[in-house]
Image (cartoon, rainbow, N blue to C red):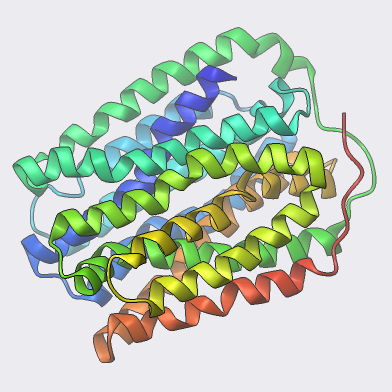
Length: 371
């Protein structure tokens, strides 16, 4: 599991790096809010469309080779996002990276669940790896792009190479287990799974919306420069390191459903603080938002897998992939609204989305715990 977790971190760097590149696209290429939202959309759109397909394929065939291949694809795509000045080529490069991320997650989550023998805590550590990747993305982008500009983006491929090696090493260790173990049996609760997925979509829109714009928003609200913005993005991501581990432990004590509901309530209050409270206090509310968004992260995955015990690949592709990346589809709407009004006005709708997610979760029950 440690190798899978670190490999997951190397891949999810490329989900966080797209948002981290936004301020540099604005500064170096003078892209509008709508234009940079389109780049985020490119990373999310193909990922959203392709991910359920890879999940369905994972239900029929074991494809562990996808892990190192998709890791390389995600890194190579983003590595060329800063090369040249063509907006179309930038969008295409980011889209290729999104396909790599999409191919990785369903099979990786299936392999991780089998290797963990159904342990929610172990799955939490696997999810933690991805969240650490998200958190380190702004630091990686700042170190590379802030030093040499967008032309240095090919250096961003290095984590992908490391991730491919780690994934291959992990698969060699657990190949016997994954070759023999398959999904469980039982009744699939599609109604509860649909409600859970709807809640995750709400969470996704909040997360992707803030990931795209919190750096620019923090600069406006605090009067700081690009460093102030990168700190806000880092705080938003780094909460995953604490929140994901805390989520597994809290769920062991109080149950997954109550913990997930509490997290959505915390997210509602914290997002309101981010949008409405001025000055440096913004960072405190960003931290609260991070906790609210990340505590239920691995719980979403295991709940989805337990609601669909005979469709683990599909459940993983949707809970860990589709509903996470689909939030990027809302980014152009937020960007266009920000261009027409203000960034603060565009972020206001994000306050209501966790409330909607909480309403959806109010009618679901804990599934039977699988082995």
